[in-house]
Length: 422
Image (cartoon, rainbow, N blue to C red; front, top):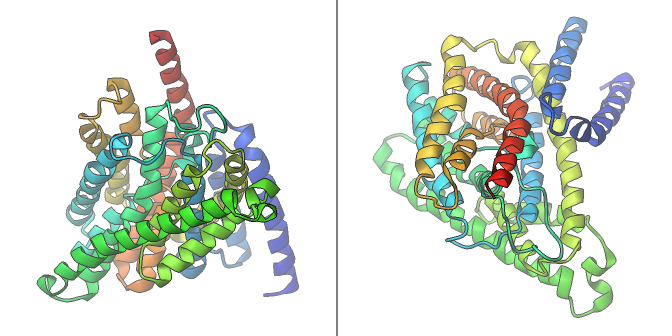
């Protein structure tokens, strides 16, 4: 790397920070959202850079960079989502979340896998991988459909908007629950006869690693929360000193520890945040931690979107044909809305309008980028890997455009109808 490259990197980092500070506020509640604009800027930058002959940081040419950048973005976002949720964790009060995770998500994975195998002509393992990577939802890219953040004082243990709660909590958990199906695709491609490894996959990858991750995250979060708020030595209570940086420390430590012991780090980070949130729930310190994590999340998200936009005009979509594009369109407009709407029919917390809105906003985003990069680093899927990247990138951009443009208007109208009804 030359000195000019380093100076250019500093310039790009400064611009990214400036965009992170200004764009979310400039484009709040507008049809043109900050993610749309950033992807567009990245696409123009990719065209300009490509003409100079300089190598663009693309998922195809630099998969490790994209993988670890997206990984960091996801775990930071999961901490932010967990800290933002006011509602205590309980089987009954999180009923809409469980329905989306246990019914809608597997249906979406299966439907996309079948479409990928039948319509796009992907091998079975690659089709399952495509279903898994397009399963996670990401409300970060449509902030109007997620809860606003932790509520200090009165109301700190309630969440009145069931739509925003369902979408936020679903995104907090399905980023982790897609991992077993990514491993399923990898094993289909590499592990030989199905019956020799399927029981082990069910016992460990599907169940065991989820349990380990959730338990490790909950225990760590409970201990950290008690230390932040109730440490016996008063001067060492970080909540009293207002040190929000410990939220980032918790993200990195819990994720690293859980991965080392074999659990899913994504679910551990979310469980850690939920456990921290339950300690001294009405304390303002939760808001301070969430604010810091949210700022870092914005920066990382913008960087990933800039790189994704640049890659779009630098060959990432070369393997996309009309069949792959149709699959992305069907997922956004048919498969996810239908699966989620059916899964929520027995949720009395949501009326018919709210079910439709919740079903529609299955935003695809950074989690999908990470899963593709991770899986292709583990196993060579051949030419199918380029097709998976192309379909995934197309679907993310489509989701950014459709869900981003409609989120503010739809949620404002829903809020107005609720007000009129009461």
